Amino acid sequence: MTEALKLQDSIPEVAATSLVGVIAKLEMIVGADRDIGDPTDFPWPHIGSVLRDLKAIAGGLPVCRRSRERTRSDIAKHWESAVKLVADLKEEGEAEQSGDVADFRHAF
View 1 (cartoon, rainbow, N blue to C red):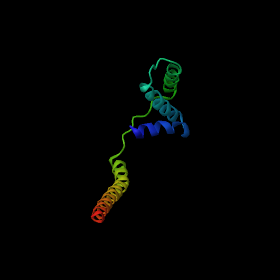
View 2: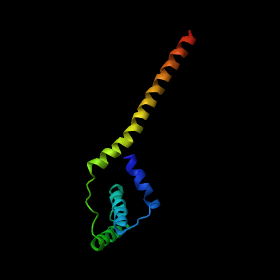
View 3: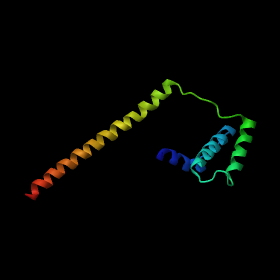
View 4: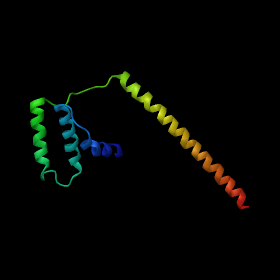
């Protein structure tokens, strides 16, 4: 959920380079309105209308399916970071435990 909110917060900083990009940005904005109290209040119906107009002119977002090769490449890239993070957390936990034991011995 946090990643989704970070992505939503970054929308204003990202420039669309095509009509499909504009449609994608509006899709994310309109999708975020599900958490708003009354999606029938201004500007939500108006934004939805603009989104429908853009889709009628440019077509919808292309349905894309990532190749397995690209997915595996992304996993491999992030896997190394995840392994390092787990090792660092394990090392930190071990250091804290040794420190606790040393502090405990000095207390007596």
